[in-house]
Image 1 (cartoon, helix red, strand yellow):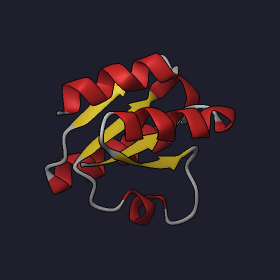
Image 2: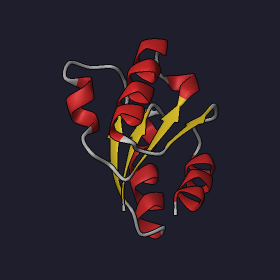
Image 3: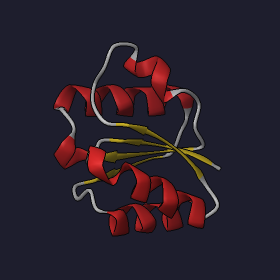
Length: 92
């Protein structure tokens, strides 16, 4: 299962990827609203947005893409590795 994570902390990227791999998922990590943001989201099986570490515009775009492509989306305020593990358990 491919999951795209939007938001979070740059310094935790390795831990995010390792937690996803332990759960049997591949993870694409996007830290902020960048050029070609919508194209970078791609076509994942699930979308997780850490809302406290991303702009309102990026959150809005992510939710629009998820609704348009019928992708399940989870909005989580905290951005820890344990929060990601919880989201990955719900995504299965």
